[in-house]
Image 1 (tube, rainbow, N blue to C red):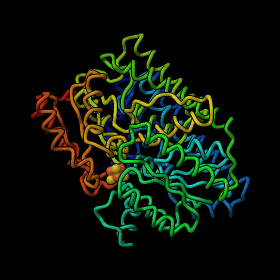
Image 2: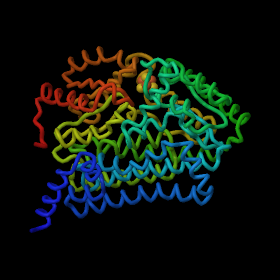
Image 3: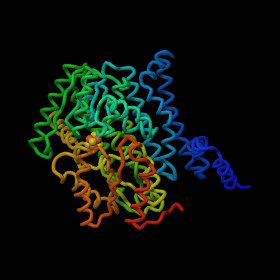
Image 4: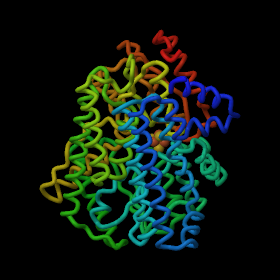
Length: 505
Ligand code: SF4
């Protein structure tokens, strides 16, 4: 019996295992090795599997050494969601299914880098609570970091917790609704509020929030302010933010925020430090643009999480962080490797898609399934797609001007605020830039401003003969629209509109 026959035999025995045992095995390292049947890919997978576990274990051991067993238990009781990250390699397994070579490596590296930066952040929460600043996710951390503060983004965990465990945030959503918040409100906001109500969110010395991206997000900070009982500063984005006047107004607002932080926190502005952070952020942007240029080629050398998850996590929470810069350098290297050897990220790439509106954290592997089922390559999403300029680092004033553009044109904000053109024009620009075949709209039931645009978008797409999938879902709550339902919406669209055949049969 040769090795392939043996593997097929073992696989057949595993399929006979009862449900949970079978899923557990399939998601394990051994499950990957058995399925991949490639020594090289197995070695890449095993490397990231081991590095992720090593990063998590290091966090626990350091906490044990510094605080002792009682201190460790106290922190774990205070932040029980940390246990969810034991499922990180399960997410690695789901997201890498069927991926090979440089694409597999890029996906593994993205997940590892997220784990490493989250561990860095948790260590700051544990060991330096007196320097912890609470930011709304749409207020990037550059200024706080330059002032020597550690910045915790309140909504940040909502991006990753459902990726490792799709149902773990539901209890926080329920907690918020039980406390009287409108069930129609956005689950992204309700998740953050629920964690605060349950006392499971880190508490800082001050809060910075804003009037972005929508009423639900903005209103939640009245509650957060009351619950935390610390001083708050709200920055104010004008409705029309693409103007000289708006930038001037916003720079003054940022100066007010710096003065507020100097008064209420131990942080002091260090402009040289801000320059270093902005330069490193510019470097990330330069690398990302190089990556996007390579994505324009058919078939694309990288796709999905390596493009959109890397952007949202590292630009929003860890701009200029050495881990972020290293990740983008490596992503460019891996994309170049595939491009030079004419190796597509998605074998049998048939369709190229953009996803508009926030993606699907509780069903993160939907793109992986679509890759294997129909050869769909998701190349871009609206949280990532932007046309920011690099920050001019010559003076404090120019840096604040650059940051003001980035903040006012932040994810969600740049497409859900101001006139309809802000939403529509970027979709068609992106469609052309990446030579796409279809547009997917993530129709999050609570996102009223984006939902209001669907009718106009349908008409425009019909006129321009662009296939459009409006995929109903809830951002963080899989009870509203199930994964099966979401997948059948994709199937119906592919069968009836694209007349596509499944390639995994
Ligand atoms: S997804 Fe929509 S409703 Fe939710 S925070 Fe973003 S803009 Fe607001």
